[in-house]
Image 1: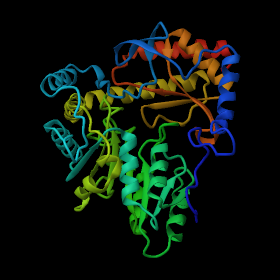
Image 2 (image 1 turned 135 degrees about the vertical axis):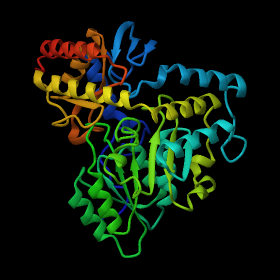
Image 3 (image 1 turned 120 degrees about the horizontal axis):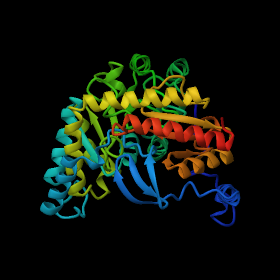
Image 4 (image 1 turned 180 degrees about the horizontal axis):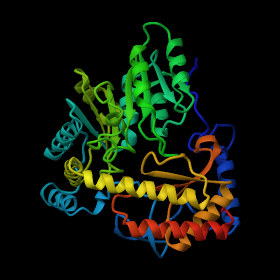
Length: 416
């Protein structure tokens, strides 16, 4: 049983020590210095000077195909979405300058929450200023001292931080291991508050959680269930409601967390729930109460995008087509991938180490392709990954072009 916050090492949570308060970052400073000394472009300082569309931009002065933006449904340039934001900016100004519980609730915030309730078929919806704050706020508020949070070891940083902020006992289990999760649940003292936190799609490897069995076991052991659907909202499930819908457990989970910065195409976070007492969260959730609300233009774009995602079957089908083609093409070229079969819009390409990964990242950028370089220790099993996130707006021709870029860069760097 965990006796407090046990979590994998992460670059944003180094161990403290004596002397200079920055000394705890020395390893990260050395890693970056060594990487740049090898002559590669800094992969963590890319600048987009101009964005033409969901799939094209000028990056570091070069025309580039975007394959690392999480803009899954390509809503950032949707004419209706842009028009809604422009109108709200004219009607309500640039910001609210206040918290949701004071002067920061405009008509647009209510309309955005109504769109979320309709999208998920839920009784309650609560909008946060970021997806990070949604996890931080909900988890820290409902799971406090004396309660237990059972979570996947590969959970997002916002989930870990929500657990730490709430001071609950953290009980991690091996990634996607149903048996390990059940064993940990059964060890929790009788009568203790229990929350199981899962993700529909895990953002590093793009793999999907076995939610049907996990939710069943959690409920059998008296736990509430929270599922983060940040990387599956919009395109997984018949109506795009995520893995909870695909697995048939949407009515069994207590909380669904999501973000506007992926498929919705703007910024913000949310939680939807059917719990009859959920609305009290607006008065007791500190990251909601003590944060300025989203600007009117942002909630207007979010509400418009969410309503359009309700009728986006063709876009979902095309996104899945893109994912299957890229995954299969990279596998055929000899790249090592994070999943055996495509499970989401994320395709993770595993690199031998950070140095070769950075070289491959730069070679792709020279080809005119941007992907994410994800490095240890943030990645599972200390892998270095080139993380590709496909978009419903990528054309068939763009996917074929991307495969050619990967082949040339892979051969030039010796990766394949």
